[in-house]
Length: 215
Image 1 (cartoon, rainbow, N blue to C red):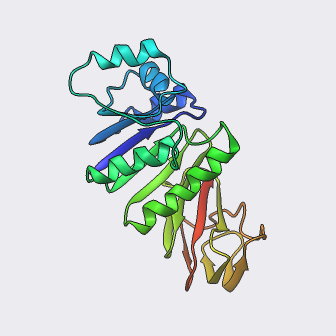
Image 2: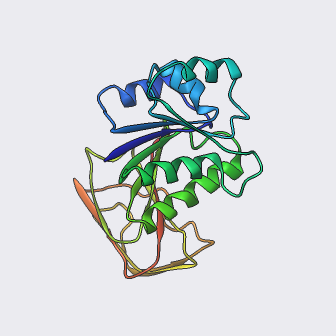
């Protein structure tokens, strides 16, 4: 089951419209202020989740009149962000593959927190990625093969999420590595590029943030 979560960060609606044009999702969740982007994109959400502190009341009223939309309102004083609550709602509904729009470009603490939420998804066996007009970001706890026609842009970067990642080997990349250990605090694996039609990363243990991006 696939899911789309539109949260309240910065969204380039021209990009988002093009991205969503040929994609369908089994469940769409608007998160608080992300409902404004949902409105601009003319998407019908299945659920609206949040404490509703950054969304206009008239917009909530408008969507409240549409039958079949679930409203999940939370108190502002809570332990979780609205995006975390939306991810929980999606997973409880059976979503196992989700894309998050609007998770970057706003408050930096929320952007970093959203990256950490991807790790929580990974721990639960859920595939999740953050996408914006320049980046596709996800978490790896095992190797992956890359194909030139499928990556998000020219650059592929790997950053350690755990304190150490051991035995990184990169093949088919402009800057190859063989059995290299990296620690938090290094920029060694930023801005690599595919040199062949396919490239691969393998590593023994640890967790990596992967960012596919373009200028």
